[in-house]
Image (cartoon, rainbow, N blue to C red; front, side):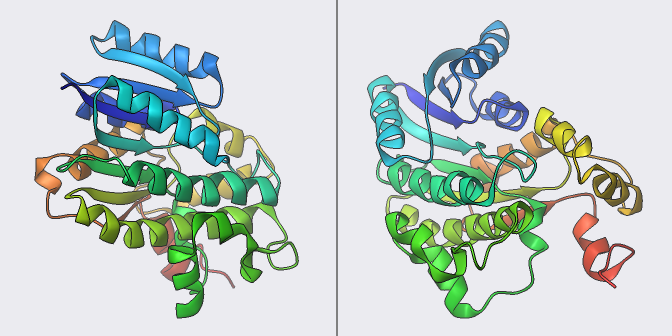
Length: 275
């Protein structure tokens, strides 16, 4: 039976991880837009990978469920790379919560029902999740374990509580890492693992939108005062993704890997610290 790696979000980071973990396997590349999936598929196909494409809207259960059905017709699902999402400059708070928070919960639930023994998943969260002040233990548990279809009804996620896109993004990404920790328990019963990576500023089209958007000056300052002093590359995220999905990461599950060049350290304890 063919082993299948499902990549949701056909951008630079999803592709970078896929290149490292998909040799000899079938890749199913899914994106909201068919043209994005096709463009990524051409790059991977030209590099020798066997690739199929699909469209998916992660904010609807029917669409995610249909993607699972498509993937299972191709073979045994041994890997999930979930890299789809919208950034604060791209969408309103309600859309960010629906795509980045609820959509991730759907992907984890639906693919957690079919992931093969020995399989692994990686969800791309963000350094933004680490910039949110501590939540209460009740809020953490609610984000981690509330049934997916009830998630957006939580009091803490209502418009009077989440008033801007950046806050929506931060709480979504914090929610992603909490959700993955809870899902790791369920995936473990199937003999599978799942983790999050929380990248900092990685040079992708999405990051360029941010650097040229209303928060661009803040992003450039983050880079300037970080310990490493530069932005990251998709390939560096790919290296961590390969560790987490491969045999060297077999003891790692339910974890979140912050890789931001030291921006979060500067935010809490350095020059970026709020006055």
